[in-house]
Image 1 (tube, helix red, strand yellow):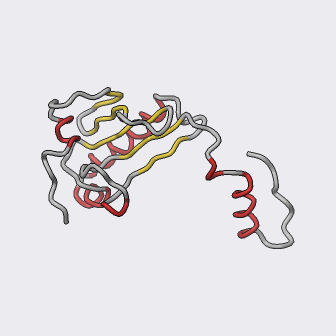
Image 2 (image 1 turned 180 degrees about the horizontal axis):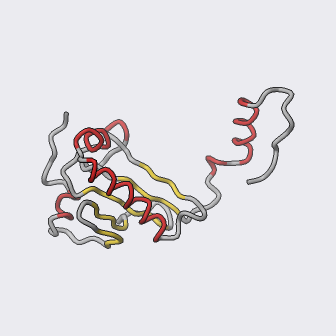
Image 3 (image 1 turned 90 degrees about the vertical axis):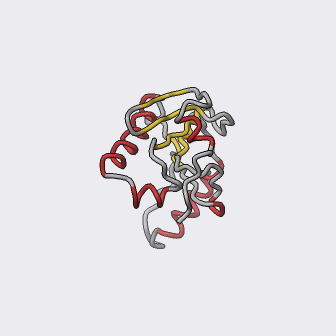
Length: 142
């Protein structure tokens, strides 16, 4: 297991050493805008406890912390108006998973339409792979 690094940028934000553009805060969670957004809405949600990764958080956090964290993720998404149109929730884990800051966090990204990964051609390909050959066509736009 990786040891928590108290000098990581999120630990410094939690201690008030570095400012952030806060979106939400409670006893267990802090949410703030990402400095380098990848979408019109890009918020980071972090637990206040010293957890390195999703695995560490899942294994070590109390039931209260777990519940508070995921409730905060949903609340922030709702408060930012993301729930109606949809959003992405990303938790990169470890170096090979693209985690840059060794403090567990999730990215909430929204406000972006036309994501090429969900193109109608791809959806048709997925449907063709999972539907029986004689099934009625479900070829419709979403």
